[in-house]
Image 1 (cartoon, one colour):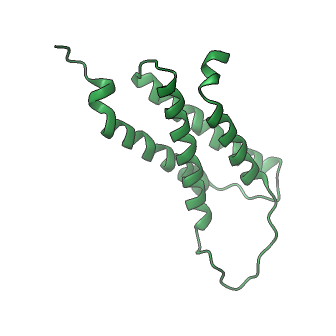
Image 2 (spheres, helix red, strand yellow):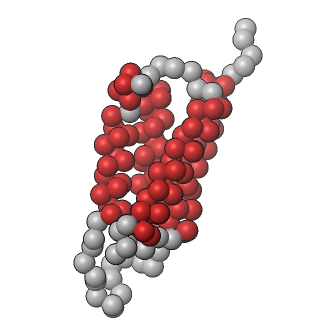
Length: 132
C-alpha cells in the first residue's frame, strides 16, 4: 500500500490544500458587486478537482503500472467520495460553510474533464489492444 502511495504524494498534498480551502472560514465580503462573478466558487471547485485528478493520473503514470478501465472507475469513485465527503462535512460539521449539489457537480465536472482528456490524448498508448 505504501508503495502505491509513494507515487501519489502530490495528490495527497493537493487533497490537503483542497480540504483547507473548503473548510476555511472566509470573512464576509461587502454586499456590493466585487471582482468575482456569481458562481465563481463553482469554477474554483472545478479547478481544484481538475488539478486533483491530474495528480491522480500522474501518480498512476509514475507508478509504471498498466491502465485499465477499472483505473478510471477507481479515480472517479475516489474523487466522488472525496467531494461528497467534503460537502457532507460542510453541511454537518463546518456549518459556517454551505453544502451545495452544484459544488459537487462542479467537482465531478473537473474530474470528467481530466478523464476525457486523458482518454482522447492517450487512447492508442494505453488502450491499443491490437498487437502486431
